[in-house]
Image (cartoon, rainbow, N blue to C red; front, top):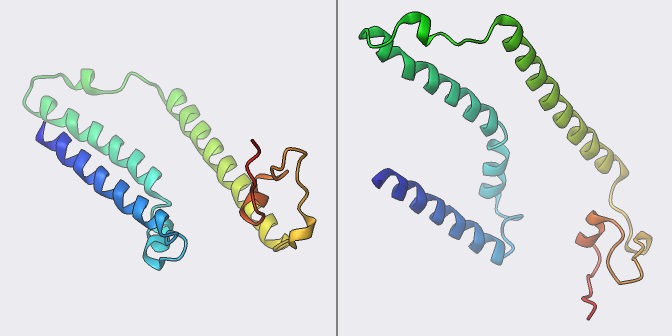
Length: 141
């Protein structure tokens, strides 16, 4: 229970800090937050690997002390299942990364657009999601 409260307190502090930075519009200007965002990129992979290591290490004491047989501690999946799973994981992550990377490169090559080139819809909303950043958005009643 105490551990859960500690995690909640830490998450709350992070949320408040992010809210304050966003309120001041400093999220995009503070170099520390930008570096933090950059360094958090591989955190998903680290979390997956840490979960796998935790699972494998958690099995060991039961086997060492004779409370569980070695054959019961081994995963029931065969080589084919693990290979297909690893291949699918690799394909999905490579595809998502590749598409995102190529989209960002296209945006960078295109460069900034002048304000006159952004068309708006009849209800006053920008026609493209990213044009909302550069054009004024007017609420319609």
